[in-house]
Image (cartoon, rainbow, N blue to C red; front, side, top):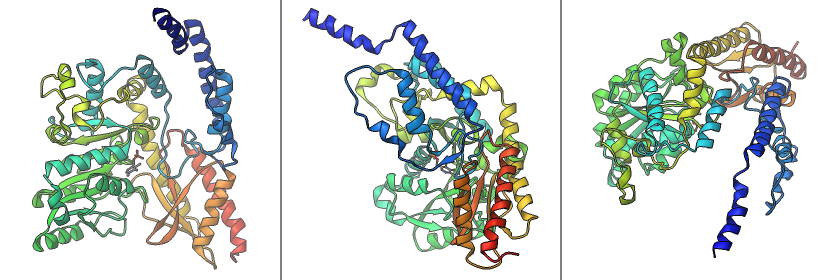
Length: 483
Ligand SMILES: *Cc1c(COP(=O)(O)O)cnc(C)c1O
């Protein structure tokens, strides 16, 4: 038996490369990263699918592989096709980030495998995450007894908020049929998922009309609430957006907060896209009233330019979050500490989780806040610049002036089907590949969308898009009877 154990130990040691081997493979990975970043400005933001990924179908074998060959597979089978999310040319959907020190944070978090779920296990890891939450609750203007949690993204953060609202408002299964939720048609689709996952699908969902800027109409909201109350229903939750995905519109949160208070409703603000614009003056002028919400969602992997995998939920009173997610388990008895000192595991659905704090804390400390503020101001100004450039060019029809950094726009040719024309523009922009934009339907009409949020998107990328659009409308326009 002892021999067998020793023999297994030898083989299992394949999991622990020596310092010399670590040196080699770490360098290989680093060189790969450097070469990726060096080539990034030259490569396309979008490449169509060519089926290269067959490399990935190779079965796993018992034998060790070679890192250079595996990195080659990563390069050819994974990174070559589709949208390049690290590129500043990414101006579709809501772009993410990928600032470099966040990767170092992940590297160190993974090497140390620090467990930040429970304070007893890593008091410092938990404190680091609490510090980040506190910084964010301060940013939105929440009181000192507020709290929150770092999540994998905005969808899970929204689910956490909805569950907390349900528990705090004491919506039991028998109440669901009679309870009403208010949101606009432009609320992010993950909120519908959250409502279903939280067992609230049978709540009466009221789609509140929007004004001409695609913001929730607060007067219409109040009418709906009063009607529902009068007919004996139970209004309980308003879901607003501080930056919708479609048009970037910011709902009038301050006004809606007054209504929520008068009618005793929970006010949730989905600020996954827009929330971090609070860091710049242009954003602060638009994002008013967030401090009056009950729960807010932010996405550091959008507005703080972190790599994917960072969302955050903030709740006005940490007790609400704790009561909605509290647990007791005998096997965790050693980990229990003072009731008021909540750990992430007390505040979320997760127990074991990545140490999410380090990828966020490290860039904030290393870079300081100033470049983040500048980048966010720059994004807003780039969107305004783009809007104004198209607005002064004949043929372009624009959506509302951007509240933040999303612009909806379309070209209306002299004759022919404008929707088909704009679809051709999106396809042509994708075929060009240098930059990437997406499209949406606004009141059933096909619109192109620009979303400026990548930290690598600057004037050059926006000017390139303007130049490309000009060429395309000239070229396609002749087919549509222009000139
Ligand atoms: C991105 C986004 C979400 C979803 O967040 P994920 O991080 O993609 O899960 C929700 N709401 C809004 C407004 C968003 O922009």
